[in-house]
Length: 63
Image 1: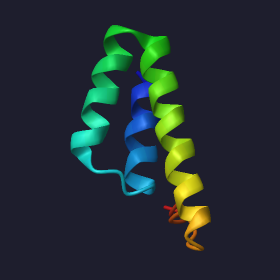
Image 2 (image 1 turned 90 degrees about the vertical axis):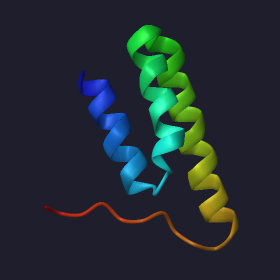
Image 3 (image 1 turned 90 degrees about the horizontal axis):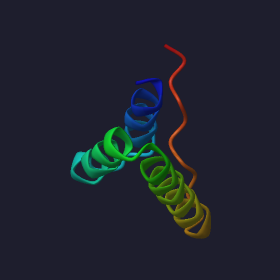
Image 4 (image 1 turned 60 degrees about the vertical axis):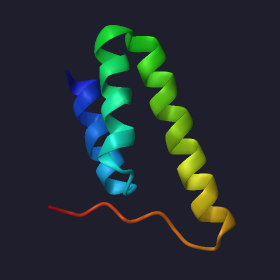
């Protein structure tokens, strides 16, 4: 459960559309390692794309 919560909030922080986040969460519930690796791969691709375009990933809020 904590893994799914982390994936959800990380998707929100990186501004990943919920239609992309939902299948990752389902994969995590059904097949934990595959869902986790899919999430980490998407996170790496998103941050690499942001770094390549000169933009930075959105900062986490301190709330």
